[in-house]
Length: 228
Ligand code: MG
Image (cartoon, rainbow, N blue to C red; front, side):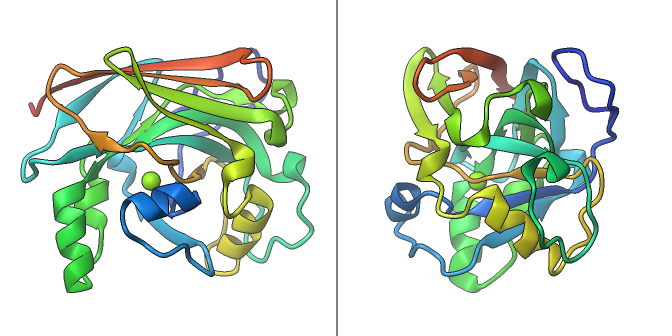
């Protein structure tokens, strides 16, 4: 899938691996009764889970009665291979987006209890929703970014990057110890507090904005429908 920048960019990327971070905001770890990790919790989603655009559809998947939204800041990675040490954001980050890490919470809770993988709970078709990207070069510094998520016009999540437990300059070198980072890889950077269930016909709106001025940089809209 070709990734789309919402403003002019000379670069082109095909979507690669969809990496995700778990429990990267203290208050979200607490709301699910989890400990804040010592090392980042990394998982991934199949590429078939990806839905990309400014207006998308979330199909309510079979096998769950508790589909949760998790609003997240998403990084588009330039690559860099294995053992990325000298971290310069411009060398690693090609762009920013906002997205939703959709989770079958009941299935995930059962998997956690049994010590089983999360792939089914977090990897079904449409489980990785990503807006268009803003190129790194035309975005404010990472430290100035924030995002918000509304469900049916009600503000449910609002966060700033300084609330993350692990920043990209910690996450990307850590991941590259184990994975070769390739151009077009995506990184969902974790969700803040406020996650909750979705119902068919719910409407999600997300905005990427700055922390202080609430300058809106990107927006994203998704509608929950029945599984087709
Ligand atoms: Mg998440």
